[in-house]
Length: 271
Image 1 (cartoon, rainbow, N blue to C red):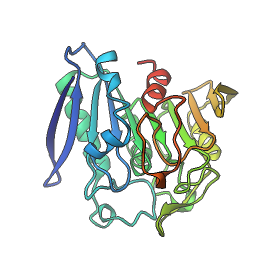
Image 2: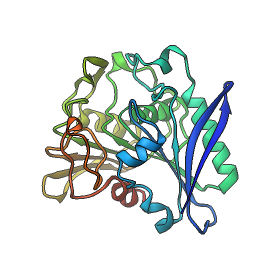
Image 3: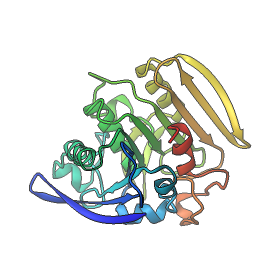
Image 4: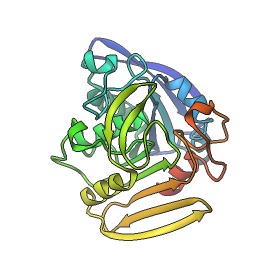
């Protein structure tokens, strides 16, 4: 496994990212992007997630990329985002499109999966809406759909895309049942509940066949099929995080040892 720190010039700014490649590059690999949360960076995201996605690199021969937001944030889908990246009008949709195109050319990528946590998940939400078809799959961790009033994007031109969402019921920063999201008095506006978000994406994906599964005790999977598969993993008692073996600051809430975010992505997208 090789770790490379690189930059891409976009809008007269050097945008940083980390790329991790397998020792032996396969033909036409899958590209997995992981977008960090608020006040994080690519390197912080690697540690915060316990390197859960990096185990997939040599195991499945994927290309893994961690882009950096500007001033530790992405200009995501929420109208009420109040970080510098919004006031600076950073075009992260175009940046990600260029980054994906560059990596496609370099590694002859066959498909692109975009995963994101919190602010990063909301950025994946914006990419799905504002650049439909750019990615062929999405994994959203603690990132439900903003309410209509708080949503910058529209569904015009939506391309059905397999989506897996994960949310903990003890998330105090982005409430599982919907409402105001934020932390330490910094509101990011209202979001829909996790289940409302699932239904929103399932409808866009043309998926109406429903089933409920329980792969682990205290974990429920709501799945819609018939079109592009759309799933919600609900973890009872979990906080605002990506499941991994990493012990995190108590402020994000409790984790789970039942499975990791890497395993979820691995299984859902059949890497």
